[in-house]
View 1 (cartoon, rainbow, N blue to C red):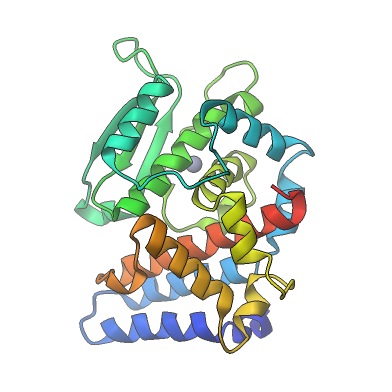
View 2: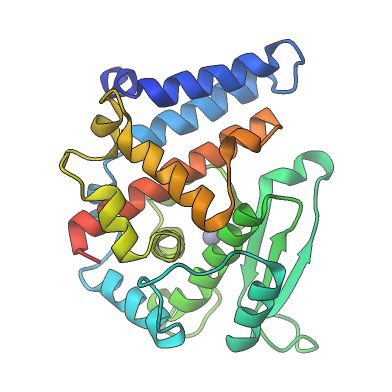
Length: 271
Ligand SMILES: [Zn+2]
């Protein structure tokens, strides 16, 4: 699949530039750089439409949209946010969730973005979401939304109310989540919240219909630019302003993953 990687000149250029920035400082170990690069390559090469079809039953996506829309009437219609702890607290209150947030940086702790616990000790009495607040607000918002996605979709995959295995949400490892319907459902909520349908149409349903990756090969790189502009304008996120190189690569991976997922949801299900 080297050919499609070769197509993504703009992203390849960006990844290489980020890695070059740190080659002298040693901030990204060689092995970590390779792993991050591999993750981005996987996100670029995967067939997201096929992943959706393989992992989910027909109707699952519409059920997810209906569940989220029942809580937020503007879900998938207009952008949520901007991301803030106040907004997360309001949503948690609405959903009867216990929200815990704290900055967690030690010993690679930056990699941990959040988790969801459906069954908690009686003293707490309600499901819990933790988010690592050491990250950029959009990254915290992405983690929060992913964990809310688990909460909303729990009934779809655990009808008996049993506890789905609690998994740490790590910013990277996006491609692996495509093969896990529980994780994919949570990521779908993130993509739809981040790119409501009217905006998704503007960004992804342009004249070039061959998907995000081939389109990135055109000189203007319109789709990737539109994604970056959308994240800047709506969520105050500027990749160029992220100064820590490995975090920048993590965020880039997430950007590409959620954008490609959104594009596939529009193409496959017209949501
Ligand atoms: Zn998850």
